[in-house]
Length: 417
Ligand SMILES: Cc1cc2nc3c(=O)[nH]c(=O)nc-3n(C[C@H](O)[C@H](O)[C@H](O)COP(=O)(O)OP(=O)(O)OC[C@H]3O[C@@H](n4cnc5c(N)ncnc54)[C@H](O)[C@@H]3O)c2cc1C
Image 1 (tube, rainbow, N blue to C red):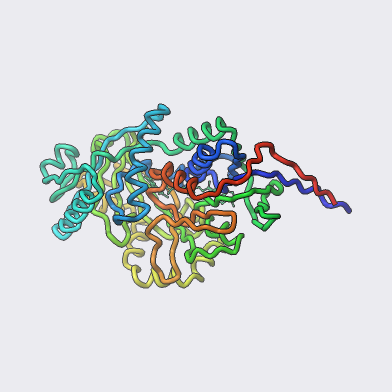
Image 2 (image 1 turned 60 degrees about the vertical axis):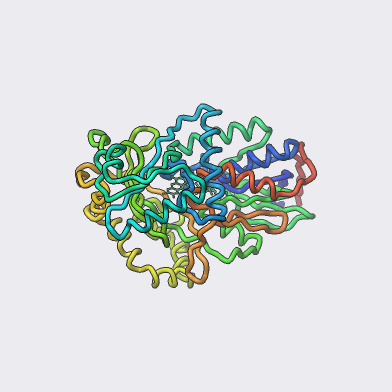
């Protein structure tokens, strides 16, 4: 019996993953190498269906990140480039600013360190007394705050849609509904095995988000970290109580887990979201509490790094789980910022799952992690603020990739046997 024809399509650069990082990378590589043929492969039928379409929509300022880190650099520059991009392409956004507030006396020193760090980053910010906070956010009760005027809001799905338009206008191709199942060496190239046949690329860029570690393993690349999925659940204020929040209200972050601590975010569509919390997801793309994938869960539970993290921070973990099942506890956290908020004011809304890389010693990979393979680059950790920083991450990768011989015309090999 004849086996079906295997068709290899040759491209210069293939990007795996149609989230905001993959799309920004495709665009940047296209800008840098205008004659190259570029293909984005996305497993879903539509783009930005995971982290990039399920986030808080904040254009971060870069205040939180360690000086000298990629996160600090890319978010600061990314804040400017994202706002500029939205202006240039008519994408609705609002540079509404945010306040970070201390509600307990012991948070004041951390707020001060944050203020000093922001100054060191060269950010324009202001220290605020409780009354000054109330001039900006009349319903917030606190002991002091910091205002960060450069923070903005946008819908990142709209940003992704614009990236796609630009990739296509450069001559690139974005192919959805095509899952990458394997990589193998070709003749100086990479052969990409997918649910829709095989493709050949001179260079591959892995931007697979929640699956980036698995895609890296297709090439036997060990980045020293595994993706552990943390679900973030949100509530939203009922429309008649939206007036309680003018823009963005954040607590002072926990330095170990800056993503912990529920906050209020005005979205670009005028709704006001509260959250997210952070609980272990039992499925990499598990958006409901009941979503379980045995293989995903087993992979997490058999990873020594997970248990090291859990044994060190089990109190935070339990608190987040309680917040997930008890609306009362979730609301209590919010009432520390705005005491007037009640359970009746909040209804559940979407959730997102963060792709957080965790090392075998139980430490979270704090910075963006971009690793070189053979004829490949793998984005192994791109958590928040990677949406804000996407244009910068894309440019950074485009500057790393080698120039490969242009193959403007897609070649087709039929290897029937
Ligand atoms: C709850 C939450 C709130 C956040 N809030 C903010 C915020 O306010 N501001 C901010 O800047 N950042 C925020 N972030 C972070 C930001 O959303 C992510 O850092 C960013 O979206 C990561 O983009 P990505 O392209 O790497 O991943 P993704 O958007 O997850 O994209 C990866 C893509 O790869 C595809 N894929 C995976 N495996 C395969 C395969 N084998 N074959 C083909 N395709 C594959 C997936 O289907 C997916 O579309 C938040 C994240 C979460 C989860």
